[in-house]
Image 1: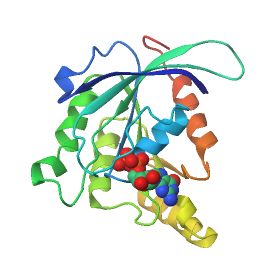
Image 2 (image 1 turned 60 degrees about the vertical axis):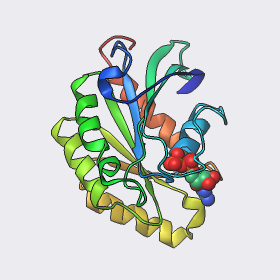
Image 3 (image 1 turned 120 degrees about the vertical axis):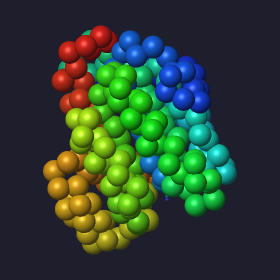
Image 4 (image 1 turned 60 degrees about the horizontal axis):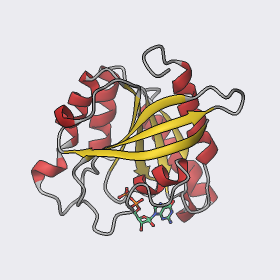
Length: 207
Ligand code: GDP
């Protein structure tokens, strides 16, 4: 899977203000500062697409990007939305902001165009209570989740191996997990493969 075009479309304050759900959507969610923007930029091969946060927790908008991608094997183009969801769980955010993702993700799932969720988790902290809530919700609405343990360049090899084992144990088959680093590129291909796998399952518009 190779992204050939990535364009910012719109920022919406709530799901009902989002663009029409007329193509498959893949959403990215995580606590503020986990490296979500860096991942999106790297996947889209555009260092300026998603803003790398200066003040963590400031962005509470749902950002849609229109994406065109191809596979290495065929020239078939796939059109989809990349949805950058607001960061959650930042300590300095208001209580309301901290729980924004719960009603937001529920509303997003109701669109039926949501085909997969990338949950980005800092590999040094692992899965935390709020992440667990999100995973349980996604399982309930049958939305596939792929967890990226980010910033793995900060971990020693043994620490990374332990972090992955712990995450996979906690996920207990409800989501897949991988290592990722925007600094050294670890896991970029694996993340692309995951998207490609999800595309294979698309039967709706845009697929
Ligand atoms: P977001 O708030 O989740 O979108 O996170 P950003 O992508 O804005 O990154 C937050 C901070 O972490 C920035 O200072 C980034 O440069 C840094 N960062 C992002 N990814 C990595 C990574 O893989 N390794 C390291 N060491 N730092 C990273």
